[in-house]
Image 1 (cartoon, rainbow, N blue to C red):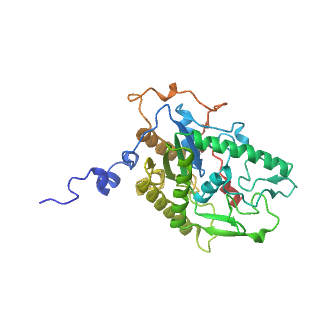
Image 2: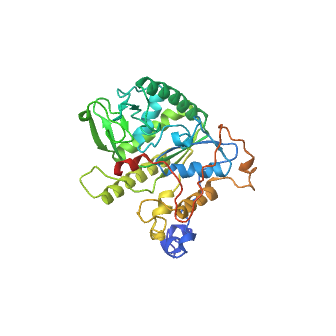
Length: 351
């Protein structure tokens, strides 16, 4: 007798692939639909955890795309353009729309207590803010030109989904990375509202973004990941742990739905690698939120193993010429339990 499961690979069975192997041997990555070669120009965006992917690609000498360059203290080089954290898919979609003149939100500047100004869509990229509203507008114009260059030039776009909770303007639905008042405040705080995106909204936003992106870059390939980092805080009237599970579940469902329906799109399970049962929380620091260097290295080693063409297949990625100016070493030197350095706007919620 036989049954449909009889000839499935070991990866299909919990005992053989999760509880049986040693934790450091568990590998939940299946064969990706494509790999990254030394000639591919790669861009990244998303939540805080996305910075680890960028660091890995740079360390390997891949052609990591940076269309805005400058000191990391001013958020240059953190992502492929200086947009800060894009936590929700609505932020990503609206970034594209703003860059191409498809959407012009009413919010132009928010105020700091000392009279300086910030860009509400990337409120922490400029330490101390800008002296004038005109400086904000001029820098935003340069930034959006760099965003267009990024979308049009990249061969591969990697996006890490981070959150479902966000704040938006009641007037036109503009979505921001931080709530008003956290890092800059508008004139009228009552004109903004909290919104927790559903799975349907998140999926629809991502599909709309892909449709737009492929209008300007027909052959771009896509990799989606879900950040394993829990919420710093929730605005829902419930425990932050419950909100975290909801948020990550929605993001995982959306990524699955989109990848199933989109050619040349892949999902990389960094979330499962870090939070899976086999880890026993070993990949989290004492705060149960920060991912340890061991966890980051494990997630990135599996990414390299499965998604990056080996030296035996093509020329070594070290032979590729970086396309951005001012290529910097993004891997921080660590001592003891010090974690890899990343920039995370969300941490401002609990300072």
